[in-house]
Length: 111
Image 1 (cartoon, rainbow, N blue to C red):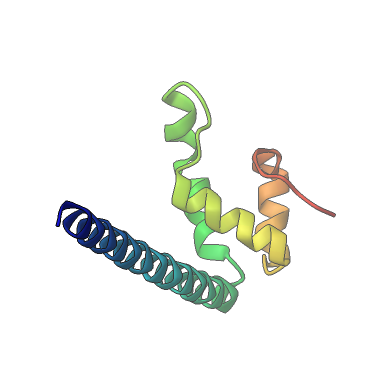
Image 2 (spheres, rainbow, N blue to C red):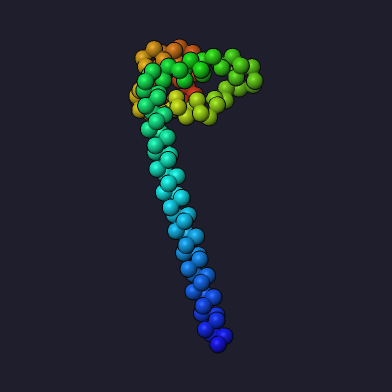
């Protein structure tokens, strides 16, 4: 009787563990799909103006950031500018402005 009860408990625990793991697997899959979709949406928005809005935003923040004791680029702006540089979708004027102000040095550039 005890062995049967112990076996039932073990089978139930294994089933529960499998169910939890499968749920976690599904959530990770959904998170990956959402991340890819978000990145595609961001790229489309950045391509629409050649990343000029992000460059302008960074340039407008430069004085304030330098006065704060260093040049720490906000994560969302930095991530988008890196994406523009990596994909080659930054406009020539935006890139020239980044090079003129030497802000381009803050980002890894793969030429």
